[in-house]
Image 1 (cartoon, rainbow, N blue to C red):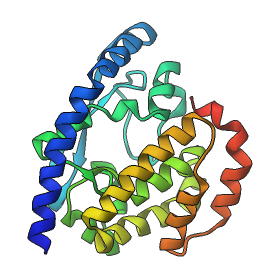
Image 2: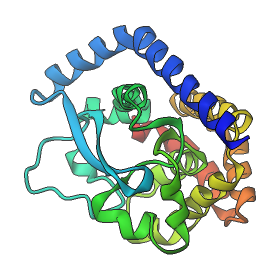
Image 3: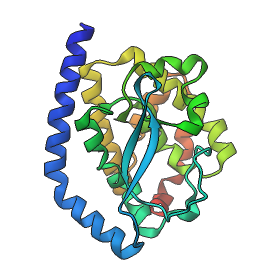
Length: 237
């Protein structure tokens, strides 16, 4: 059963990533032009990340932040002041993640799996009871990624994020390890599409957030916070 799932998952990754690159290629050109106009500089950001079995690889993203040679990734939250306007839009629409389809095609990532850990955050995201997360490939989307996108992206303060978001995010990574299947993966892909579209359209799918929280007995106060902040979603684009 495990071998069949692994085979089907890899086959799906190859087909989906190659198809995704072909279909979204016009969007790549639009993003590239937008970056060149908004903040001339490198088009791509190569982030050193930790994947399956704690092996290092370079995750590719469209650059959405101004270049800062002194920047580090110890913080769990991005430096908001470094995100330029067009970069904020491509982050909200997840267009900055499109180059990771290359990572998926080459096999360093998968479509559905826990988000890659930065080297600086390894002890937090892959340590202790979360060590099992390193048994699978890092992915583009996951229950934790959806929770972070629908709720965590609202939280800019580092301490507030660690208190309110991080515990459920780590628990959701562990939850996925025990829950993973092709059926569940396809469900998460659909949830991801709904979440991105809902955010852009200012209609956050709260039911997805509720399902993620219920899976790990998370604090449902997050749902009320999101409902209160929906009117301000435009600030993220």
